Length: 114
Image (tube, rainbow, N blue to C red; front, top):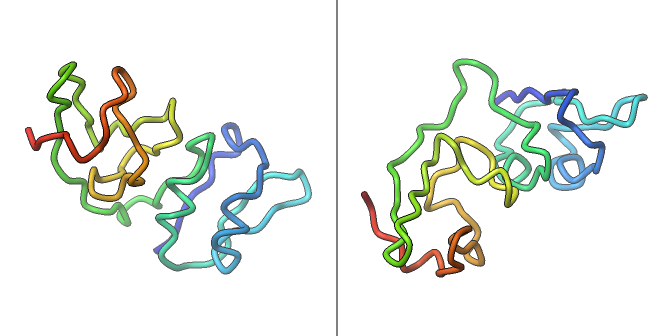
């Protein structure tokens, strides 16, 4: 799989390169660039600026929405949770186990499919 790095969003933290050096490298301006191919979903999800995305035609299939039973927050994988480092296109099943509802703090495992 090939990826794009939005240079306007990239903050140059180097997380993607440290996780997937075969796919990402830092350029002379201190920003990440995608130069290789491979599965790098962990790097996409770990990007604190949500600057990494699959190239057109390479998108991972996005699953359904999930609802918090306490406050009604809806996790939409097409939106993600960028305020908490979750990139758009992240399926609910791929969220970190420690992820919680951004509104009320309920654990991921209490959400139900919409």
